[in-house]
Image (cartoon, rainbow, N blue to C red):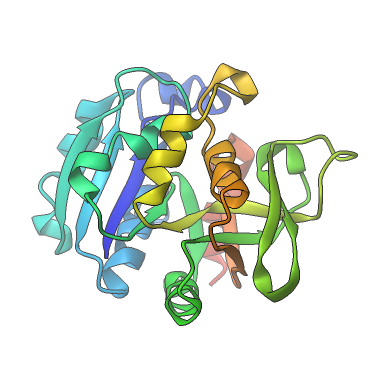
Length: 241
């Protein structure tokens, strides 16, 4: 299985820091937050990783290099236009090919590092077309929110709904396992929230087409490093270990 890490966002909620530094390179403890994602992928045997870059792309290339330092191999692709997470994933189509692949957002901090093992085991056991990592979240306006069904099936998914419109308290936390069907779904996806091509809308198409789309609740600590408060929280968490 190959890996894909979207790392093309501008990080507007972290300005002015992200006017100079990509949010994926912000330090949590002694290394950039994206390195924790790379380490986790390596721990489950994923060493061929596509990184989707855009904003301040040269800084990410300079920091990560070829991947040799981290024991993996990187392929970089550029998302020229910031038009949604769906398009970021689609940018990697030519490097992923027909193989199943794992997507983890590059600005998310997870602990312990073994957080990917359970979802990969679950995905392989049920032979799903797609498996989405979720957790109970307090603010649905920052997440794609799922409507869960029996046997861990996803019945519906909504991008960043209001508290009143959220179908449950289970939100996507930036971990996805797909096969190549997702690329066809993204092609069919129309602009949605923020007039962008949302990955959640492409997942919704998979569900509507009868694909086996499931969820796995992720245990442990998850922090979306999207604000200064989140960045402090991630560093405070590591300091207390």
